[in-house]
Length: 186
Ligand SMILES: Cc1cc2nc3c(=O)[nH]c(=O)nc-3n(C[C@H](O)[C@H](O)[C@H](O)COP(=O)(O)O)c2cc1C
Figure 1 (tube, rainbow, N blue to C red):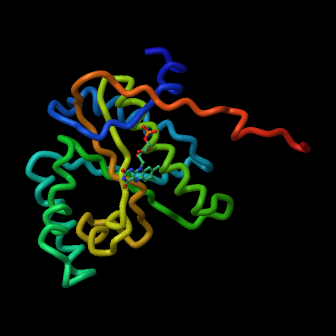
Figure 2: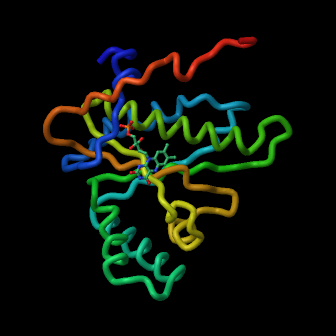
């Protein structure tokens, strides 16, 4: 796949199925993520893969976080939370590792980690897989962060869901560049 074709046509895929990327394909995914622009070469990121039965465990963690935040949570809401990680055969938790740096504010470190997550999406599509970046309230829930073993200086930038998909890839809706780009001074 040509680079520009990929950049111009990246789309998310919500319905993801087996097979997940294999070991060699994952290596490519993560190498692409590691090429994110990175002020100061801080490498302000790390990634966790969640697959197989671990997705059930993650669903339980989501449900228990929901319940901890709202003891009145309805059983349907808890079941929905449990089912979330089952929407793809492989999840990658993209984590920003924020540090104090004299020249690189934490905001920039967070942006780098987000670019790394975008690298995962692009490399997934380039290899014929589908992917979607999800967050939701649980991505910043203290119970979830603790359950995933994040340190105090770490944040989840996204859960990247990955897998195969059926049918043709969606064509993205066209946007008019002129609606978003101006020159300065105008
Ligand atoms: C930081 C971030 C968090 C997101 N969280 C969610 C989410 O929780 N649920 C969701 O459906 N889409 C979420 N999205 C949006 C999808 O990943 C996707 O970009 C959007 O549906 C548009 O589809 P497209 O990527 O094909 O243009 C998030 C995107 C970003 C960048």
